[in-house]
Image: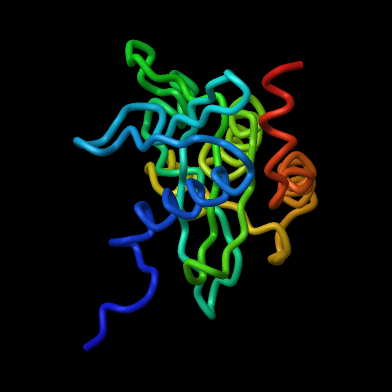
Length: 190
């Protein structure tokens, strides 16, 4: 049995290294905030031209069945109710992400990233939550349970026009940020 490959057990650290490498390639100095455990709200600090950015990384593993998809993380009942945001949930934490990078990784060399200002990431995640979690279950009309929040930018499943419109709005928010390592960081300065 081989442990080779990206899976749910190692996708987080692999995604953080991918983001660190990309940021360093783009001229940033990067520090990992998770060296001594999990840091609330942000995983990395990236510094360039005297400006620091706190970055949260979310990793998802590419598979033959799912292809390229990106995960926002897991929602809670409070997130579904709208009582807490998807990102920067810990309001009392020292770190607050300014940039969120969603990584879909097939391998350490083959990946795609959505590099988002936290405001765009939150707006897209809220659109997703409204469509996927804030609607009643079809089976019995009850509330949906917390779970993974994710997006695929290409696949369109058979669904209602209302759901397709919501999916379209979310995709339009995200597409300009796919593999664009400058846009999210520039928007933080302007």
